[in-house]
Image (cartoon, rainbow, N blue to C red; front, side, top):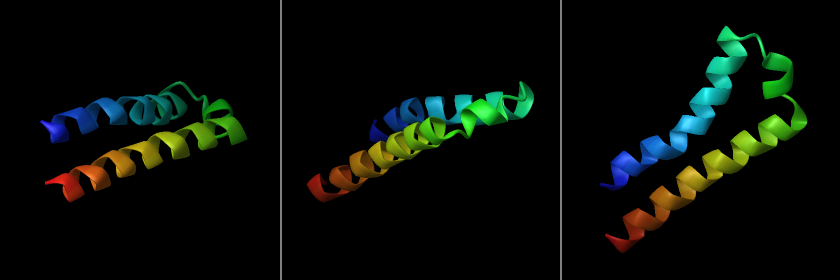
Length: 56
């Protein structure tokens, strides 16, 4: 079940990357705030997965 929930966290990351690619929104997606948001979401994915391994 925890592996399925990871896909929910990846949705915003893929949304930003795909919009930058297909809609040519690279300037907005890769601005300082956009990169900070992607970094925080990625850190959340890592933290959730790291704590799940310790509990198991």
